[in-house]
Amino acid sequence: MMGDVWGVTTWFEQWGECVAAADFAGARALFVQDVVGFGTYRDRVKGLDALEHGQWRSIWPSIRDFAFDLNSLEILFSPDARQAVAMIIWNSTGIRTDGTAYPRPGRATVVLRRDEGVWRGLHTHFSLSPAASESSFGDELCDR
Image 1 (cartoon, rainbow, N blue to C red):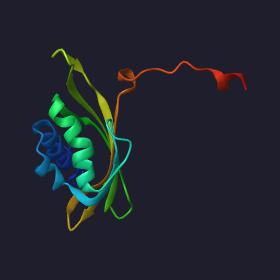
Image 2: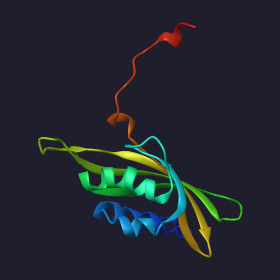
Image 3: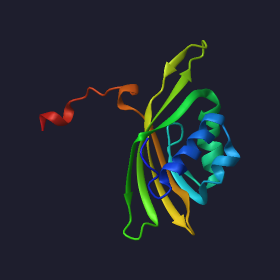
């Protein structure tokens, strides 16, 4: 695992533990009230209540083995180091209706702000990995 870059790695460790345990209260403490997000379940949510109820509660209880790949963490800091954009890979196990498990890998982008030394999430965007998504085979634009 990489070193803790100004606390961002620790933030992802904590959030990953919350996701894996479906610890909604713990996760809420890591975000600002007016957070916005996109996800694998909802197109857009605004506000912490909407993120929890529209995204987190729709996914976290139905997956297993969630973990961020901390070695994949890439961080871009603002010049004053009070804001960061982070990209990270994650893995989880999905459960089909027949009870069988399947790999459910993905990636996330998170915008963070540091106030008084504490990082809080401002924006999250989760998506499944391209290999886990359907391919599009249209070629209408290629003929132009």
